[in-house]
Length: 124
Image 1 (cartoon, rainbow, N blue to C red):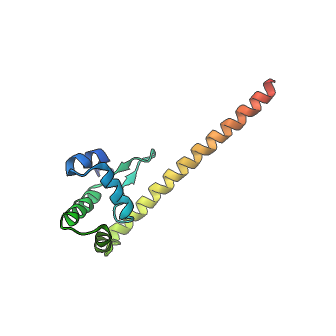
Image 2 (cartoon, rainbow, N blue to C red):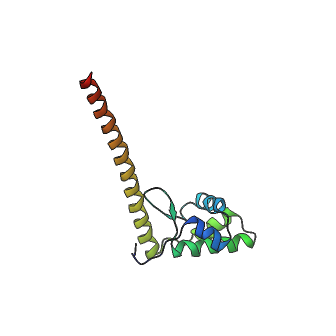
Image 3 (cartoon, one colour):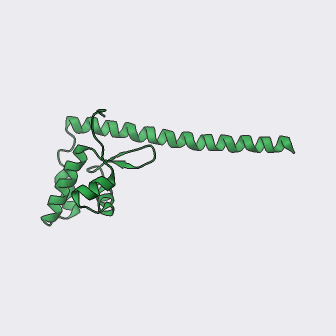
């Protein structure tokens, strides 16, 4: 991702676009693969300018009466442009990094617990 690219929180989008946060989360879930925000290491959503364009289009289509399955079919076509493929690769890398950080956290906690157990045994 470009260091200069601005990222937005779900609260910022909700306020600016007048879309409730639960609606944004629901659209993300229901339109799997079409609306894919980035995630921080803590799992918080971060939206790019491209995500905002998709959200604005979803909002327009919903206001015209389209259902989410119809929107998914409409927006799902042609999503894998070269730029889209690169973003998807970046998003996969971000998710792998997030998973690796979580695994490292679990391993660290387990090792600490194990070492505390050994220390407790040797102090008895």
